[in-house]
Image (cartoon, rainbow, N blue to C red; front, side):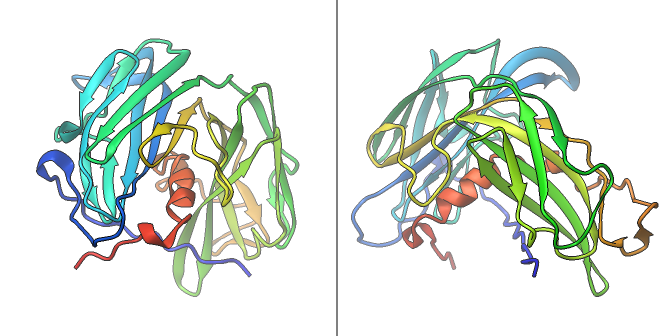
Length: 291
């Protein structure tokens, strides 16, 4: 039986200094997820610029009020208050007030970072994962419900890979979209037969290489300092040929008439969200209800 994934969108508030609200008298703790992502283009003054670059994202999670002061990547220091939003339970690192993300131009093979918060400092070092190629599926255009599906790819020596999938299906009169994330430390992944158990279609699927600890309940932080730090270097995502009809297909688009509606494309929901979701689930202490 397919588990329905419910995505909750919360309005974020920009706070001066990006300080989350104090919660309790528990011992001070913090968990940092810091992700440097390889890119091939960026926008400047509304124009698309073709040049290698990296962007920076992350989450700073704590059951205590916590403030992001600065984060430094190689020799570039960014002020925390300019690139973060309040989120329930911590701070989201990302866009500034004008919609720009922290970015560094150039082909950056290795990264060292220092993050300074009100609870202390975390440091880490990583190299860029090798590019992968030729992601292929073991089916061409259709898949029976309750069947396994394997995706495989070539190249690379990454620590692990994220397989991100956009699956569209019906529940009564509702049109539902599932953003699925799976992790593999091999150059292939087989979806269990329970993954695609109802009629629908697979709109998008891709593989992204990462250096950093593979998300699991036994994962070990790879940053040094105050709290637990999980540092990742995200390589370039490659897509597999999608448009796979599952069973009888999406209602209204039976087999042979697959919709090409990509309005909910996987690229609007970054692959690293699977990592942040997994790390957030490691401890119930990091879930804070805000009135």
